[in-house]
Structure formats: C-alpha cells, structure tokens
Amino acid sequence: MRKALVDPEIDNTDKLVIRVNQLIDQGLITH
Image (cartoon, rainbow, N blue to C red; front, side, top):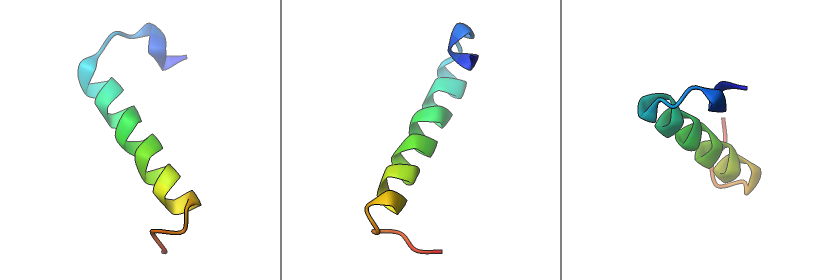
C-alpha cells in the first residue's frame, strides 16, 4: 500500500499509529 512510498515522515507516522493501537489493545489507553 503506502509502503511503496519511501517517505520517512509517513513511515514514522505509521509506526506511531501502530504503537498507539498496540497500547489501546493492551488496555493501557482508554478513550
């Protein structure tokens, strides 16, 4: 998908989103 675009900023954003999603899945963050 977007991984075809070698853009460090996009990549860092994706990693941040994935990290936040992992924390939410672990129940460490509640909305």
